[in-house]
Every structure is written in structure tokens, then in C-alpha cells.
Image (cartoon, rainbow, N blue to C red; front, side):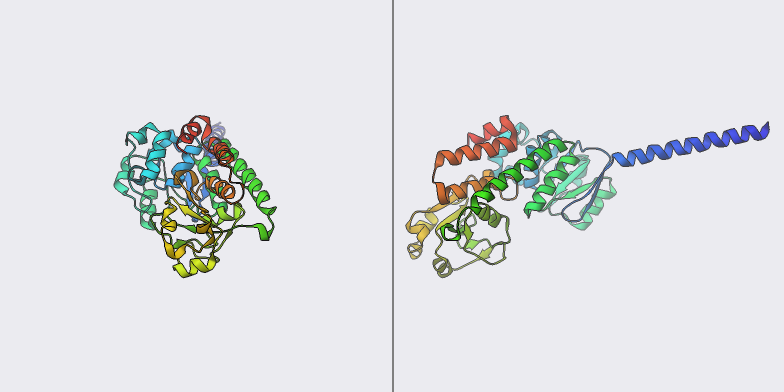
Length: 339
């Protein structure tokens, strides 16, 4: 009889251990585990409820996913850069009132300020290895974005949608972006090489002699628009001299958030076809055309219209479709008032 009770007790203990092991295994199965585009491993026990995001393109993704309520910290640029603040404030009253904490910027992070917000996820682009390790040691997962290729844009949209618990919305946006890009590419492919316009791109803040090479997000927009980049180097940001620009002689010039007068007022550039024909355009306001988000579709759409269609009403119609799809009816309609 004594042996019987010992065996029974052992079986109960064994069953309890197996039950606990099964619970742990099931718990692990529910964990969110992924590797970001910079090779950093991320594990969350459940979708994040409190997010510090220190990279403005990723903040944009969160609003597109309609999960802005999870934000507890944002990059300082969203307040001091009017090109960001003037539009993000339309999406969130907390940003308009500058109520959301700014525990860092696109390039810097304040560990103490981040920890004080008690986030269950930090999203950033530029964090030192020691900062990442410190946050992880405090059980704060870190996801690193890059937004530097179309492939990574799609992966980051999918990853963030999973981490925030809105994968369905993420997949809808990915499917739309792929479909729209395919539509634009099909239109571009119909252009014979002889009919394709050539384009020169210039960066903002008066840097009209700083352009972009063929391995850049902006070049992807030019290609999707059906125009050829006159700068064939692989450098993302490259400085050129006036003589080189004159030699390239582009059919059109696309500017990043600057006035065309910067070109028109330089007599030494007057012989360039784009300037003679008044074919200098600006992607402005830049919020609507960020090549580091799915709004690259807006940039490609606008450039294609400037190059071939010259129909402002059609351009606005196409841009409205994209913005409404990316941000939803309410936020998209509000944003379109300022385009």
C-alpha cells in the first residue's frame, strides 16, 4: 500500500511538470519573434501597447497602421521640423499640443528618458550597440528600421504591423503598395527609350548641385515614374558642378522641397533644356512624398504626371487615392486639405 501511494504521488508530480512544460511551450508559441532589417533579433511576449519610436518614417508607418494610440514617445524632429510637425499634428492632437514625450531624435536616444516611459517596444534607426544592450537588459525590446530599399519598406511595414497587433491592416497596405507600384511600372514600361524623359534630382535647403545616384530610394521613384536619372553613379548623395549639370542637360528637374527659382535665377544654367522649357518641379510639401515610406508612390505619381501628362486635376486625383488608402478616410481627407 505504501508503494502504491508513492507511485501515485510520483505520477501526480510528473503530470504537473508536464502541464507546466506545456504551458511554457504554448506561451513561447504566442511570443512574437522576428529579425529586423539590420539583423537585430526582437522578441515580444504580446503585441506592444506602449511604443517609443525614434525614427520618423516608422512613426509614419504606425499612423498608417492606425495604431497611434500605442505611441508614448516620438523623435524630437516631429516638433522642431515644421515639415513634419505641420502634418503630423493633423493626425494626432497630442502632437499638436506637443504632449508626447521626445526621449531622443532620429540620431540620438536618451536612455533615462526612454526607460521612464516604461515602453514595451522601442523602434529606432540609429542606436549604439551599448544602448540596445542596456535597453534589452531592462526587458525592453528594440527594433531597428532602415527604410533604405523597397524590400525593406515592405518588411518593416509587415514587422511593425505584427509587433503592434494589426497584421491585417499591414497586409492590406502591402498589397495596395505592390499593386500600385505594378500599375506605375506597367505605365513606365510602355514608354520607348526614345520617349523617356531624363531627369535631374536636387536635394533641399538650396543644395541644387547635390543630386542622387541610381542606388537610392529617390532613384526608385524616378524609375517608377518612367524617367531616366541623368546621374548614373551609385552614390546616394553626390555633389556635382554646374558644368556637369549643363553637360547632362536633363529634360526636367525634380527638386526636394525647394523653389524652382533657385535654378531659373542662375544665368549660367539657362541653356539647360529643363530650364529653358520651364520644366522644374518641386516635391512639396515633402511630407506627402517621402521616399522612405509607401508615399514614394506619391512621388512617382507626381513625377510621371509632370513628365508626360501635365494634368493637375488628374495628379491630385491620383495622389488623393494614395493618401486615403495609406491613412484611411478620416486622416487622409484631413491631410488632402493641405496638398
